[in-house]
Structures are given as structure tokens and as C-alpha cells.
Length: 91
Image (cartoon, rainbow, N blue to C red; front, side):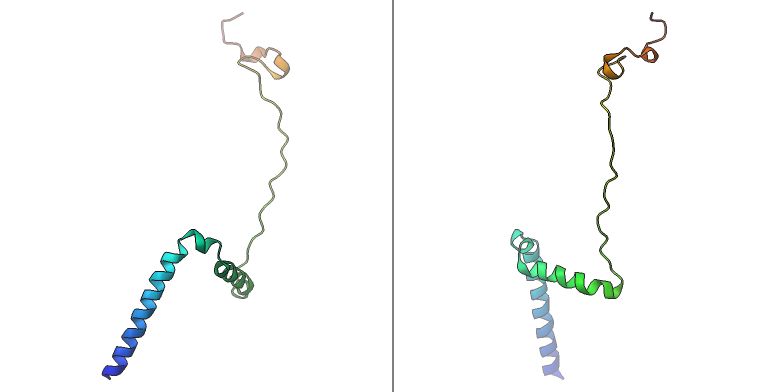
């Protein structure tokens, strides 16, 4: 009984130390560019659809036509004075 507890506690401690070391290494810039990370991502993208996880493609932005805004206060497009922008009481 006692040797089994010693073996299991040794396995548990080694797993815990390994997890802590991997966690610290995974937060470094070297991990972000490592082949291990990209292999893991590719593996998860292959098996993900079996479990209902799908990567959504990026949505394209709708085309927008923008016109230039007014040049200044009281001016409309092309520099023409906008009569609606006058303050009340001014000629």
C-alpha cells in the first residue's frame, strides 16, 4: 500500500511541475512562433468539426461610398453657403 502511494504522489508532483513549466514557457515570445503551437492549432482545427466546433470565416465589410463633409461651419458641399445652418436672427 505504501509504495503505491509514494509512486502516485511522485507522478502527481512530476505532472504538476511539468504543467507549471509548460505554463510559464507558453507565455513567452518563443512559444508564439514555435512549431509546437502551430501543430496544436492545426490538430485542433482538424478534430474540432467532429465535436461541433467550426471556425467561422471572417465576414466581409460591406462596401461604403463616402462623400466629403462640409468645409466649415455654415458651408455645404462645394463651399456653398447652407441657408439652414444660419443662426436665428442673423441676416
